Amino acid sequence: MSKAGVKVKQLARELGVTSRAVIDRCRAEGIFIQNSITRLNSDTERAVRRWFAADGQHDDQPPAVGE
Image 1 (cartoon, rainbow, N blue to C red):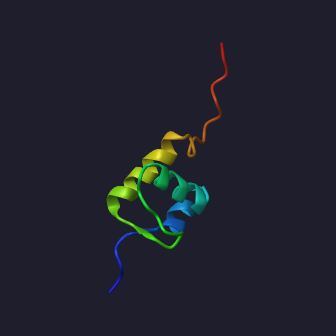
Image 2 (cartoon, rainbow, N blue to C red):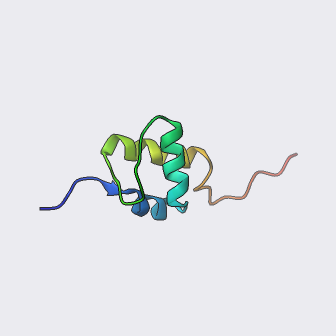
């Protein structure tokens, strides 16, 4: 029987950030994360993905040059 949820360290690796960055952001948002092997529920996982996508972590395009 497998446990539900993704581990913080797995999600961080997927997002290209450190586990510490994910843990710190969660704590800042009032979500207690004990360590990098803590499993996240689906709602928290979606929130973390949004936060780091919004921070520009996945922009493959270079910044636009001013006109």
